[in-house]
Image 1: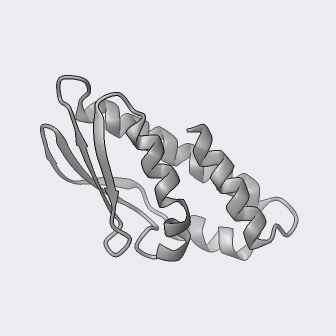
Image 2: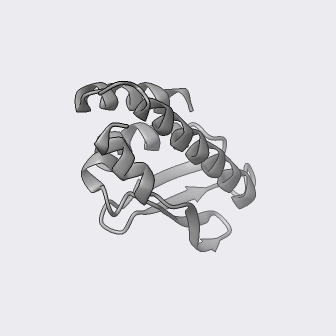
Length: 122
């Protein structure tokens, strides 16, 4: 497996709710704090995808803490729907990375391009 991918997959955790109020959800995404450079490459793509979810009005990822702050309209969506999307997408991303790691020696730019294409499909 590509060492970059292996290190990331081995150190990522789950998505954990840090704080929640109606209309506001803060979650911690495992691996972002540990690998901020890698996360920074895809933060804008991920943010754009989150903003396409019905009712989500803002998404801010902090690379220092690994926290994602989401604001949403509680009349259009709810925490459970957002959390389900985050968890499903996160698990799909980890499966994608593990599969990508089986490819013989992908280089870092190739990995970055593949990840960008994957995030765009979420």
